[in-house]
Length: 272
Image 1 (tube, one colour):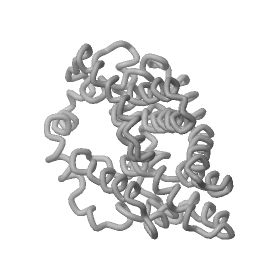
Image 2 (cartoon, rainbow, N blue to C red):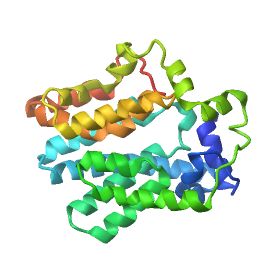
Image 3 (cartoon, rainbow, N blue to C red):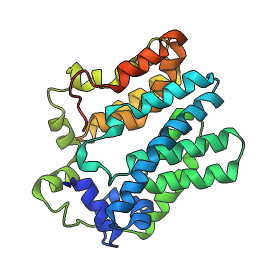
Image 4 (tube, rainbow, N blue to C red):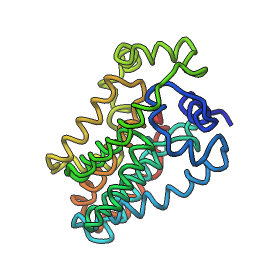
């Protein structure tokens, strides 16, 4: 199994080795899974049914009927960016972070504030940006309380240039994120196969988009100004609200066909 640099940093952190930013803030899964790949694989596998179920639950609480809500869960799970490239499977934080954040939103919707607060803190300690995305998905400020967790971790756990980041190319990305991001995306901005097509049926969510959906998608694309990855960042950031918006406008008699069309790949997709 060949793991990428992000996964290698998580395994280093699992051995209590200090790592570079922002990986030094993502302490929960390295603490739970350490450097045992089988533990990471268990978390990764368990996250898929939870992602579908919690997306459906959140959609149902947001006013969708059960069928469309379940379809939304499958649409999110079917996004190639959520599946991710082989080098982040199973050692990655995006998928578990989405699951925990959705759990927090469900808890907040029921008024279970202590549980919601704990879960959004766990989501933030899985990936520090998750409270921001959860706030955009729910159009609520409550999830932002989770940002206190990585802020506190950053005060006591300082980043270092680890052995992975010391690689010349990765050090360049670390030291100059904007320049390397713009270089990586050069020629991609109007490439529909990279920037648009991977959304699949979720693009229907742009037929009658609400302001929360527009803002979530816009902020997701803004990430590309400071990061070299593309589809993985877009889909884990805005996949949930766009899928929920899509099933709200697709006629119920087309939903099964829409899900089938979405979950299969008609062209090898961009995963990174």
